[in-house]
Image (cartoon, rainbow, N blue to C red; front, side, top):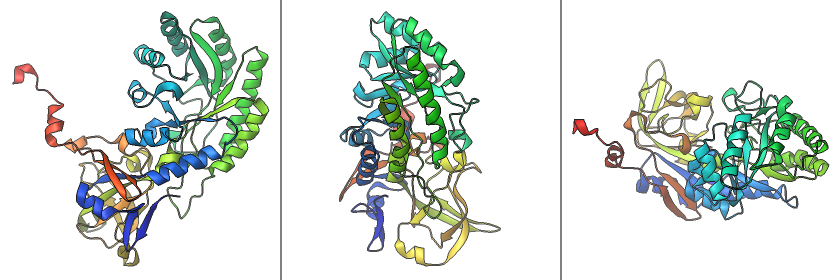
Length: 416
């Protein structure tokens, strides 16, 4: 569910008309709905009510400070993968993931007092031990276990097979927990698993969680006091409302709660896409249309603004901001941007209304992995981000000026 609907013939974000925002802010721009963010978080958290779960929103999905604060007010923690993300949120509910944590990043996280680390290799374990013991502190850790389970999702967002870089091999887990018990500065209190993103079937979760439960029982028999299990994120969302019906959080919870009851351990989660994906859109304006062997709709949002279609073969619904266009003639077209790349497209061979220069289009389900992956390729300015709450909206990341862009690149002294 989301709060983008047509009212009086114009697409609105909650109570704000998108054409009015476009006149004020200029296209293209990202737009997020507070009501949708709050609803998605609440639906997920309520599915685990009474089980003491800690929900650590995956900041990499959308790291805007206003988005993070909206979720923090609801009680969310955070899953981070870099020092920069640590600086975006109070540390007490932070879990630090990622295969390449540097010693400097580890030190920052320890000094901040984060909840814990998801450790992904023996080398990282030893580095964490050295840094923590050198500071006279102990780091709470969970090894990220790679269960060699196929998540049945896109290859570039699958993380739980043995050929992927993430986590420690299932067969090595017990030895690594034994090693951790001998090292200073680390306390292995949990087990972590995250097998991928945009998972739309329960079977991969069932398989992975069964392995995790078995491992926890083995570790406890080895004398380890495992007090929590971190099940990561990955629950899919509907990008195509006409085809997809991914499982709801309560269906996911049915599997997880059975696991929790078996283990008696605290639950941690790292949802990102399921909270933010349908909470955001990218509004773009038609620049030109071009007909030849193919019909092209050329818009002002490029692959530098939304890279998902070319990077992940991702499908995004496209809605005209003016509802009347939905009832007009439709024709197959490629929706493309102005970036100088053949891979610069939003949609290919899509049934589209007969739009003209100046018309606004909303690229749906763009709240996760949209703005965070944007770049200034072709020296294009990053697009603004807008947050809506009821009838109010605010620019929560402004469009930089060209002067700002140029100032970020000081000229070498010998060239002045």
